[in-house]
Structures are given as C-alpha cells and as structure tokens.
Image (cartoon, rainbow, N blue to C red):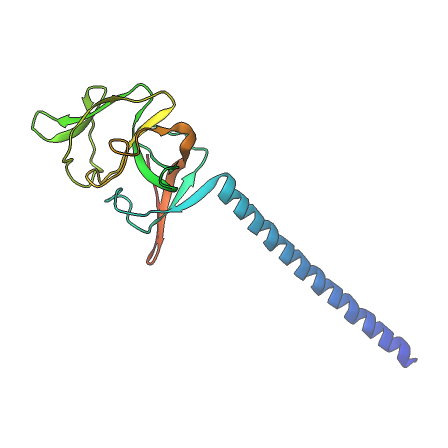
Length: 191
C-alpha cells in the first residue's frame, strides 16, 4: 500500500474535520451577533432603560434604580412615564395625574389634609411618600399634554412647579419594570 495515499486520506479527513469545526464556530459567532443586534434593536425600538436620579418618586422608585420603559404601551392616568425636559437636558420620571381637559387642584379635603383633586374628585393616592405640604389653584390640562407629579410630592419638580405640563410628544414611554443590580431585584410595574 502506498504511504502517500494513506497520508492523503488522513489529511483529507483532518481537513474535513477542521472545516466542520470552523463551520460550527462560524455559525455560533453569527448567531451571537444576530441575537446581540436584535437585543440592541429591541432596546432602542421597543424598550428603553433609564437610571432613576433623585428622590422625587419615593417610595416607589429609589435613587440609582434602573427602569425599563415601553415605547408602545398605552398611557393613561396613574401611569408612570419618562419624558425629556429640554430646559434641564435630562429625562424625568413622574406619575400622570391628568390628561387633556382635566382640571387639577391641590387643596385641603374635609379633614384639612391637602389632597390632589381631579375634576372635583379627591384622588385616593396610597402610593405617595408623605402628605402634601402645599396647595395649588385649579389648572386645566391642555390638549395633548399631561399633568404629572412625583410620588414624593414635597420635593418633586413637576407640573405644579417649573416643569409645567408635559407635551405628549416629549414622552419617551411608560415605565413597565424596575431593577437593581446590587442586590439583584426585578419588579414588573402593575397599572
């Protein structure tokens, strides 16, 4: 038997084996790149992540928590949204209290406790951090705008102060989840 033929058969088998391994590696790398690209696209097209900065949404959102925003969820009163404020050059997170046409007011209720009223009805707000220490004359929410307040009402820069009403076009999306990395916690927001 010719040794050259044996070597050639062995070399061909080794070459085929190397091609199979290289093909599998190429497939795995391609799949990893496709999934990474899909993840990035989903993050920028459907979802968005933002860091909470400050204490205006205590007790529900703490400083340095990460929040996940859905860009295509239906937004309603009571939802928590993220919007961009040009004058501050940053995103803010607040709760929607009123929509176009609503009349919002902060005044004492029958017990003398300052409460938010929407269209003459006192809101039941079991999510706020502490009782409100201010009053606010009635404000009618403009069409295509939201009236927003932070859950920590007394320290929040929101629609009752400098931010004013938020144009629907400035809204990035609705908060759907929050998470922290140390210790790891993931919480879906129910509205």
